[in-house]
Image (tube, rainbow, N blue to C red; front, top):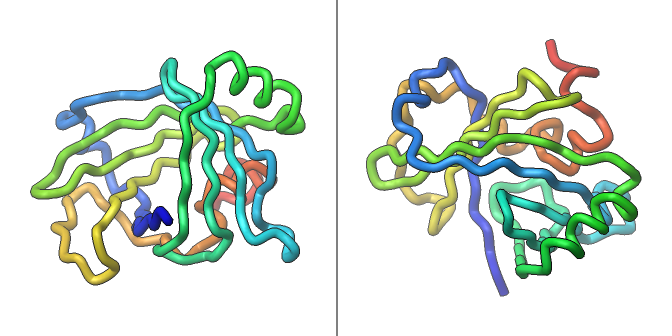
Amino acid sequence: MGIEIERKFMMKNDEWKAHVTETHVIKQGYLQSGFDTSQKSSVRIRISNKTANINVKSAELSAVRQEFEYEIPLHDAEEMLRTLCNGVVIEKTRFYVPYESHLWEIDVFNGDNEGLQMAEVELASLDEHFERPDWLGPEVSHDERYYNNYLIKHPYSQWRV
């Protein structure tokens, strides 16, 4: 069983941009969001650059969740995004930024989620120590609004303050 331990943060400033080592353009949609109380998981299709995956995550609102991810053919992913995701796709650019002993993933959203920027760090354990970069803002790991499966139905443009 795969376990993902991930913490999410808002961004305070753009100082991270000078340290980007890799960039991916991402499109993703949901076959199942996991927000219906009868659903125990979310099922996502993602294209990142020219690689496609199907991902299944447990539906808990937690920094620790079960996660399973499998590569699928690119043309299958494109077809699923087009026909099975109700025409709603999240588009974002992911920037990879190493800081101290961790690799940060910074997502800059486009479309209806334009203006949203978040940083994520994956950890080996929930209590693992990590250095917080100066460009990091408040933690939002336990706020459902900042999860992609929420943003698909409630875009940032509709509720941002």
